[in-house]
Image (cartoon, rainbow, N blue to C red; front, side, top):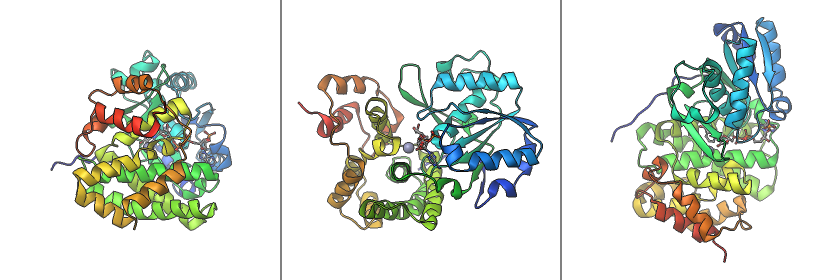
Length: 370
Ligand code: NAP
Ligand code: ZN
């Protein structure tokens, strides 16, 4: 078994990390672009803290606040132009996975003026991206620690870019910025992190280190999710802190293994049915675990013992959280999705080597309604 670990991001975590490490802001220049959305950066208090820290460090900034959920390559390209116009030396992304992923791409567009929006996927650009600093506000994607950026292309399809160009230099991980997440976002981001940990654990690429990260994350996230499902109450601050820590561990796990087929299939439920990313991936988690019980029985059994449930209890609980009963697909639709998935590495890495035919079966079983 060979493992591939690469994690060059400096993670500064804990309360008031931004104020305790202001030297970071002068390390990469004196002018930066802040990339955020309109809601989370303000609601979380992260933007206000960041502006104060940058003022105190005498760093000039301009703000691009038009990054929406499932960020568009075209918006990132436009932000790259703003970065060039303002002559910034680095990028700071503030928000959930959408803004963090967008910032990584904006850093590429900013230094590569002639890169067209969707050509970012070709990896065919000359100049290295500007340095990126991230400030997370959700406990889900782990984008703070991954060399991945998930973007929506000009055809409306979600596709990731990854590799050395997509790591931040520094990530601030202060869980207090996650306290403002409403119930829906808290659940969806927690279950996304849970999918990362489980998909990585049961991946054909999992290794000793990635398994350690997954096992650190799985029990705590599951406990928080089942408690929220039972009580319909938001987690207390201690649990929120733990969820953020777990999302970073789950991010470290996928950073070495990648995700498996629940993420690939999940993109369709976000693109065409508007299901938030975490719930969309989780819709395929029961079938994934069932498959692992067949092809990686020892690991899958160990996973179920970690969450103290048998398979049927697990399936029932996941579906009670995801609530995707009203989604329906036609045969033609399923066929069209499957045409996109020849040689997808997430399939090859799934237990038993998932195929396009398997994908059609899973989609039909869950969503084909004649
Ligand atoms: P998100 O799309 O960034 O945000 C979801 C919603 O939550 C938005 O309405 C956002 O508001 C709001 N929000 C975020 N933080 C908040 C806070 N602290 N308080 C109140 N509201 C808050 O959600 P996400 O799950 O973090 O990111 C999902 C994206 O990451 C997807 O595109 C997914 O494909 C990608 N992803 C990336 C990786 C990776 O390794 N890079 C891994 C998995 C998934 P505003 O938008 O208005 O600010
Ligand atoms: Zn995810």
